[in-house]
View: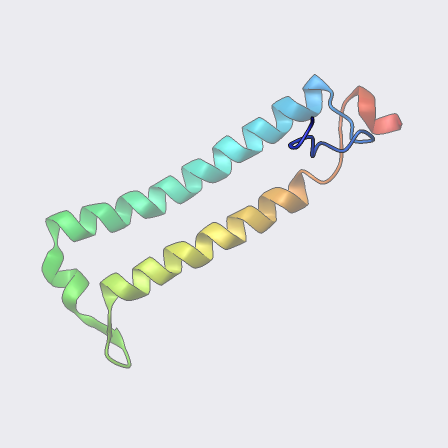
Length: 93
């Protein structure tokens, strides 16, 4: 009984494409990590800054948090767009 066989059998699974996709994922994660680290450092080292109002009664902490969520979604879309084509042996198929 195979319940979790979701891999498309027509998708190329060559090592060149997998390595490129892993590199892209790592780099985009590092971009996100920089912004998240900024959030954590501001929260721990300058909590008074995070309490300030950004706009319409929303403080900087909440605005920054929503910004992190939006950034994660944008980076996921960028990753999906960049990984849509194979580059190795499976690219010609």
